[in-house]
Image 1: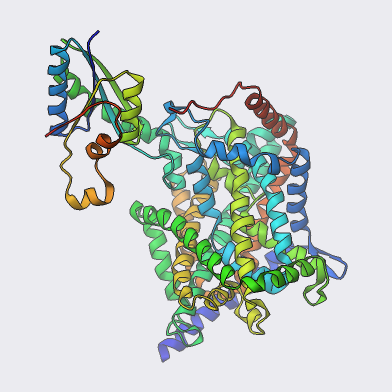
Image 2 (image 1 turned 60 degrees about the horizontal axis):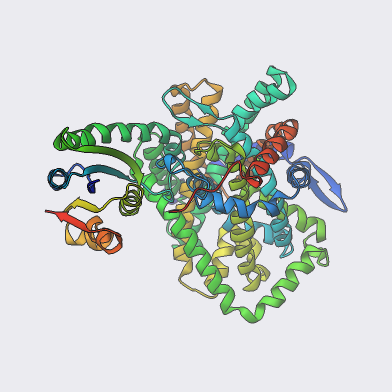
Length: 493
Length: 143
């Protein structure tokens, strides 16, 4: 018993110490202006504007591009001589396993709790616009990637901001400043969204399936965090690849199970589907003032979609960069599919389930919050599913943590000139924050995670605007080559 | 114009015996030998970001090791008396062997018996058995 009191105070103490910091960061990043009685954070506007700009500027390639993207992923344009290199499929799958995760399960639940069912529509729209931003950043990620003497390849906003901005503006220092700003915020994003949020929600789900408020580990969250931290540490510091290999195979399997279970829930509630869509559209266009009406639903929807698919944040450009291709825009096309899968398919599925099962209208819903709400929605049809969801959540959280530790390490490497000591220090700090993330309550964790992640979008999107003409030239040139047969499909034997 | 014999090799003893068998057959029928070593690889496998970063380096190392440890000893078995074309590639073993057989107008495919356990075969199948089912030309499995 004394242990419990002691442990509870550890969780609480960590929370008390970090809450003011989280509030301070959030108040800066989420500086808001009141619009129609609702606070509109400027950073959300910034991301949506970037998606909208590139959607129009690139001529709706988010509609016209996916069929070519699918051909690329199927290897129809990959030379047989490139066998053994990183394929479009692998680059996409790696990027997707970094983004599909708790944002799709917990984040969507948060969106519907705060913004009502209408947030779903805006989430889908944000996913659609996000496809264009993703295309822009991943094209640059490949164009300005760095090939080292030993043959290894890495890229990302730090490189394209440095080299690309200098190339376009002639100002070397401006590019370097943006690249450094991006790298600093990427380290924060890795620790916040890529780590604390994941550890927090994975712990929440473990507690939920072991008895909720009566769970024996309810006040020992930090111990769950410690276990996670040790496993993460074994992989990223200890170099135990087998754990990462298991995770990378578990994630697609879990995603498939998740979608399948989603279909089952929707089918078994088929009569409720029209009413659910009614609620979603009514909420989206502002007939429900309880959740802030149109603007309220829109802000929350956009915010959670951006958190989930990371379009405009720049992270995906790191994952897509090592692909084997001579045409940077080809990977830009492939990247279109990422927000499509992440947001338009997986997030929408979660949202539908929460709305169709009526889980969100449960008065306790806002108290449940996050992953617990999604879990409750599944449990109405498949009572044992929360256990499966717990495994999925842990697998997703773990793979996102590993992917983001890589992003953070690359950003650290950029700042400190690939110093191994700096990268190791980053990894140790990363593991410490797994414990902190698991111990805190959801509120301060979401605050820190969102603000650090969205901070990355400031230098990244600014760079995308500066290089917009170059991006367009690159993509239109590539599409012209595909159209006139300069770039042809590989003959199928 | 004699026959073209394709041998799938993997560095095993049975593979080496298949090479010797192919050499003798090619010699007897005034033919030539194509030696193929396929490094198992799928374009649709799931990888970590680190693996992707290191992939070009690893691929080069895998090809170099295959040339040195598998292809060179096999070419020594064939010797100079018979024309020999060495091929080292990444991919699916069965698919690529079939494809190479078509590209090189092969008349006969030879492989060594892999001798995997029954359990392993049940899960992963085995190359000779697959090959027999889908090849366009006769396949001989050398024990």
